[in-house]
Image 1 (cartoon, rainbow, N blue to C red):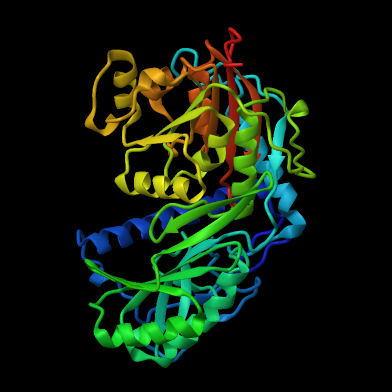
Image 2: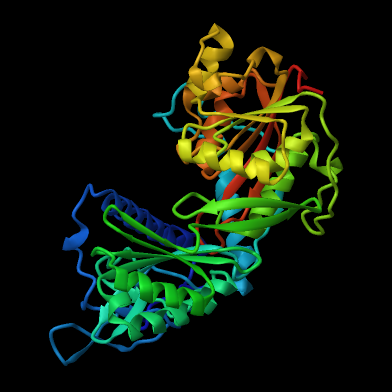
Length: 487
């Protein structure tokens, strides 16, 4: 692999480049992206004053192939040569894809190795034996179904931008986004043309978010530093029909929906089409192809301990549906029912928990849309569920659900980056089978070590949800050492 720079950067030779350094470098971009999302959320809730952010003028850079070019500073007509290296990287590199993925897999597995750190707690340094890695590769380009861009204005021109961590106040123009879906790339120039042709649509627009589906459905969110008027609504409605999308306009404490504020994604898992309503502003898996692989693997891991006899082949991906179990299934952190919809047909009954009201409502709607009738979704935290199961604690949110009727032997957890934590880890240790989906290999390793006395890792998988970045999703099947795996 080799580094990619903005237009005024001096390229390095291939021999000088180290993939591990590239991965570390690009990790910084995601910190900046998280900061931008947080500030946007605060703006929309009215809890901060983003008006101080300058989205007009300023220095900008354009993401292109490595080269050395002049850079113009605002407030003057002169050009200055600079060699600032930008860490923002939105290019795809099919020729080094597997090399970069192998480096990520090596880093992920290293978290399970023994460590001699004197600061570690007792037992945290022991090695966790892992089976051979099941690898699920991503498409090399056009794999992201959603994307967020800042909108920068310079004179009469506007452009979509991202930021790099070396120079976080300088926007980097992104004229195309090869990581994004073909629909996103189709819409990017069309939307910019619409914005530049209308001062009403352009005025104080500072961010646009794209959400697309495999079949080409699309929704665009447009975020403003001003109140949206009837004139804006009329022009945005006309634009919506020209683009063939839904539009959601947002400003402080204001939301205008033109069309609908969701898309309907269809994922084919083991030959069965699954329907998902994905809400504007809600969490969705960005890589649809990898999402399908994760769902297939989780279904498979609920039945088979050994990948070699699991009927899954990461190379050919045959559409083979695993056997159905005759016991019950618990899912923690169910979100909008992404895994629930796919896993429910595998079990007699399913209990799914989630703390967000919005997510619980979305999960229930997705279950109905897919004709799934054997699931109870309850708004409970893991701690509350523990008290209900162990102490008989009653909650109004459990009305109509008799926990004593469930024979729960398998649990699926898909926690946030911080991992499960000690309380949830202790709770899931009672289950014979734990299917663990993780967005952070480090906290996965920590949680697996905490379960080492009772469970062993029978399967370990990686899902390249975010190609060309340091991030890697993992899956682990933990089975109780006493053999009580529920079947």
